[in-house]
Structure formats: structure tokens, C-alpha cells
Amino acid sequence: MTIRTGLRLEEITPANFEAATGIRVRPDQEHAVEPVTTSLAEAYLHPGVAWPRLILDGDRPVGFLMAFFDIDWYGDGSVRRSGLWRLNIAAEEQGRGYGRFAVESVAAEIGRRGGERCYVTWHPGPDGPEGFYRGLGFRTDGETSGGQTVGVLELGRSGS
Image 1 (cartoon, rainbow, N blue to C red):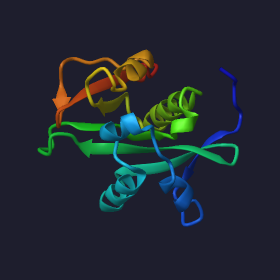
Image 2: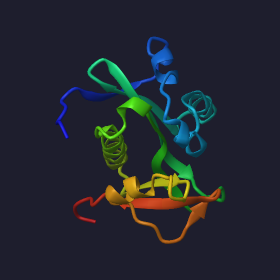
Image 3: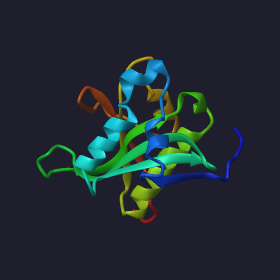
Image 4: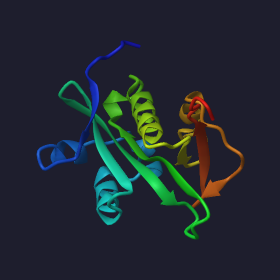
């Protein structure tokens, strides 16, 4: 894989809204991830929790991610979690390291905010992203959420 120095995340603004909403995953992945427009609507409904970002390689949009920070996981105040809510890498850009960059960026932001774990959920099955997330170090313990597998990545903070 080629090392890129121009990878960055950008907040969604009126100037890049069309680029963000133009991100499309492969047709065989559409059942497993919401379109960017749905994610942006959810971000609007959850201000301060949702963190939507456009993934750019130089000036070229290659993906979209949305993280969540400090949510009430079970809705009863017992558990708070942060993690990756959505990841949409453009169909023609997959396999180039952009997904890894996205996950690492979210994990770094969680760590910057004092978190020790990054959570993600995925649709189980042979066409799902389980191998991708496990390859990045996410582990499972049988927990599910809304029919999806829950994965957790320990961020390895020093002194903990």
C-alpha cells in the first residue's frame, strides 16, 4: 500500500455537502450501511454526540465516517461508550487504506477525549466487514446490538 500524506478528515459544511452525499459504497454493501444522507440527518438529531466527517485524500473525497462520543449505550445511564457509528468508503476507493485511516482517526479522537475503548457494530455474515474490523484489532464477546455484532478495540492508554 502506498503511504499517503494528504489524508485528512473535514467537518461537513455547505461547501462539501454534495461531495459527502455523493459517496457511494459498492452495491453489495448497501444493505449493511446507511447512505451518507441518513447519517447526516441522524447527526442533526444527535448534536454533541454524532461526529460526521468527510475523508479526503488531498482534495479528493474518498469516504465518510461518523463517530459517536459518550452515548448512553443501553438508554438507562449504566454504560457510556464512544466509537465508530458509520463508515462509507466510496466503491472505487476501497482497498486503499482509507477505512484503516478512518478507524485510526476515530480511535485517536476517542483517546484525545479521554476514552479507553472504541466500539463498532457490524452486520454479521460472509459479506459483512467483520474481517476488516478484526484485522484492525477489534474483538467480540458475543454482544449484539440491533441484530449487529458489537466489536471493541482497546486503545492501550499508558498507565491504565
